[in-house]
Image (cartoon, rainbow, N blue to C red; front, side, top):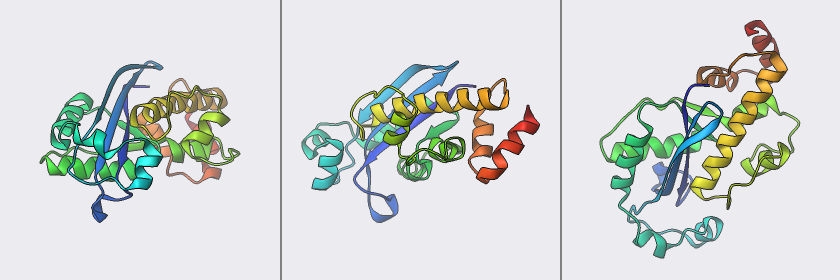
Length: 201
């Protein structure tokens, strides 16, 4: 697979449209089957983190007060990622925050995300669920750290993407799995995936 950037946000809530802001971001660059570079930072957007989010993530209001400004972090991570194709687990969530936080610093880029959750639903429909933690356990991948922290989740998502790539190559005799192919698979009906990939091989 070409180089991809796997990103993960931790946030104060579910949607920037409802006033939620990012509190942490991580991006890991994956090339030739391994992580080759990483970026991670807490980010201070000047908003309060609700107690249940503090408990879920372990990111406290005290930690955020000492963190770099959100605008500074987003400039750094945007430069780090560049035009690399993006991947996230439950990408619809991360895409919203990626676009919203970039808009605040007057930057924009084509946010063509591949979603490891949607691809996993088609490759591993038998998994008990398609949450990241469940899929890590189901596919026997290493736990990279505390769930709901950006770098650990990005690292585990990267491992899952590589596992999905291996499974697709093994199952359908593919020589490689591109970001474009992942994006195609994620919108196919489950029953269409096999026929589509058999034609490619």
